[in-house]
Image 1 (cartoon, rainbow, N blue to C red):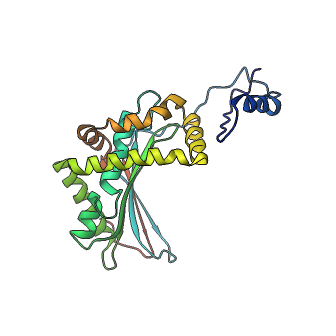
Image 2: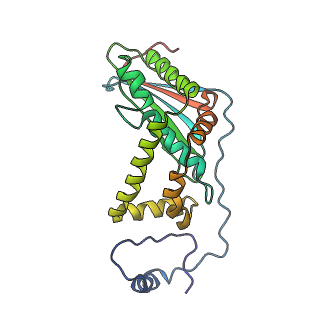
Image 3: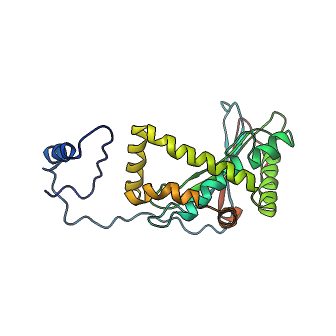
Amino acid sequence: MVFANNAILVVAGDVEPEAVLALAEEHYGALPAEPDLPERLRAVEPPQLAARRVVYEDARVSQPYVIRSYVAPAREAGAQEEAAALLFLAEILGGSSFTSVLAEALTFESDVALFSGAGYDGVALDAGTFSLTVAPRPGVTLAEAEAAMDAAVAAFLEEGVDGAQLERIRTQLRASEVYARDNIEGLANRYGAALASGLTVEDVRAWPEVLAAVTAEDVMAAARAVLDERRSVTLWVSAEEEAAR
């Protein structure tokens, strides 16, 4: 039986593989494989040579915030190490409201932010994204919030990774990978998203081991490669116009 060659079927749960295969043949076997699938052409963003800025103003905005997005490497089949380091970097910079770099610098050591965070999305057909977010306290401008964010990131790049924080995050990620196995729907989505973006079943299975092997040097190398403001877009969202930096 030859199935369609431009589709992915993911089945999760208490099933018998033979029964699943029989149902797949019954319902999808009539769909022929396409022998002449055209090459998948995707638009490629030109190299970013300078920082870009966007300002959005709307009276309905109740909480202003600044977010900066960087183009970052996505997870690659058979080579997920840099993506794993970027996931650690996101957790270190903004994964916790209490112990992350941005939280400590902008919330506890100063009165700049109500919220700060960082995120990495590496499951993508093309490049992934790495982002930093700050929502300032009342009376703090977006310019001041952005400057404080930049200062915190610069200090991190100068001081490096805190070893205890790295191991704490490693333990948290290891636990999250174990608990993820309890959610059948989540597992199906994880495999489906990975396969649709060019990863393999082996990549998904190897991901916990790749995460476990990340070092402080890996994190800093990823940070220096990605956190280049010249290859970023910064967005200000507010209810009224604020003076740009």
